[in-house]
Image 1 (cartoon, rainbow over the protein chains, first blue to last red):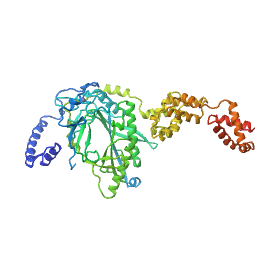
Image 2 (cartoon, each protein chain N blue to C red; image 1 turned 90 degrees about the vertical axis):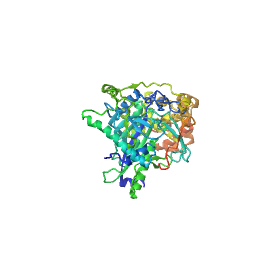
Image 3 (cartoon, helix red, strand yellow; image 1 turned 180 degrees about the horizontal axis):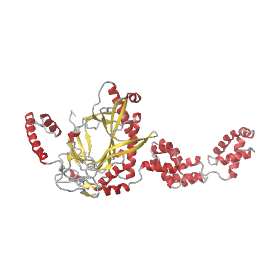
Image 4 (cartoon, chains in turn purple, yellow; image 1 turned 135 degrees about the horizontal axis):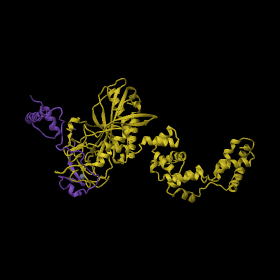
Length: 99
Length: 495
Ligand SMILES: [Zn+2]
């Protein structure tokens, strides 16, 4: 029984900007299904009295004071950018024709 | 469809999402400064550029400010909550996600009362959460500088990571035809609350206060909400009002024509007051929110929250009630001062020694007229409350009459110096020397023998023309009341 459909994989691929071929959609649907199935087994062990957790450490309220620290220079900040224009990061067109 | 007709057929339901950039010294998750207008990419570091290996740490001041905002808006403060990742593919965040809050906001279930048209409307607040602002994109190529049709974009990340508070209302029903005014009044009041808390400079023109306006319509008699649209980044108070109105008119036309409203993001155009279609709105699940693994949960100590609550400043609505009481003015006059942004100025003028009635009279009268004439605001007029107070003092002492006082104000506004300086330079003093006044009066009586005769004959009303003559001959420097007494005395008539 497959819980993850081909359409859902296609949708996720679009959100992730991944171009997947038709056979890949089937391939990944089956794989993702197995992964979800494996993770779902956790809920078989975790009883209702065990709250879901997102962090491994039992810590809260780790803050920093509102103090300014030196930033990078613009040269440093932009040094790894594939393209630069007017001291800004230059990026390809954001919206495609269909959006 | 014209607004009136739209309102006859449909009832609007509003929702407002307001973003407030906090005025912290450093960013939300790193130590970069937050100054507005710095050269591009000079306030960025490995954390806010999302360079590999960097980790965020939450700014304590931002957490505190958000809690104070929640308290001022009568919210319940969460005892435990987490940040969440909002995933999307837009280069305005270098991480490919924005750190926000999702199903566990810091503050929930509050309200803000606003006054519109003499009645109080309670706007319920659904949530107040903390997130980080995005970078600023400039779209290059294409006709309009907009994202549509652009060839490419260039991005400045100075703003990326500045703490941003999002305040979301519950759906606001029952505002009827006042919907645009309610929306505006809400954003105005919210701005004043932020100012009184000192958490943000809330400058709409600089983007530190931004508003998204949700509007839907339901047919009269129905209680089922229609599909809503979200108009983004409406950047002035006036635009908030116009965007709501424009969207009501547009949706009503679509629905009346048998069409249906598409759930989408729309753009507001300042020049036309209309909105145009933007991208279709993502479903929340498309953002694939999940708890932010790089940041630990926030669990505000209830004692700390209590102490923040106890230390809240007097909020704007309470302050207005107190001042109205102290000044003894009507609801209408108070509302007028509020709308004209004159309350701070009147208060400062009173603090500088002026009676409240005089302070109000000058700010709401002559100075409002001058501000209007030069298309500026009262606060931006080049005159201080202390100077206005000095003018009221000169009038009270009899050194100036109202007419001369107006000339003094004019001189101050023209940059001729303070009130006393203008009085000296322009020679503006009420003629208090009775000998000088009498000689003016005699001349005026001689020049206006007809009027003088009428007054002698009992037509007291005709004295007005004679007083006017004296004021004119003295170039406004005479004390009109004293001149009237002296004229009647001279003509042997009982006033
Ligand atoms: Zn930074």
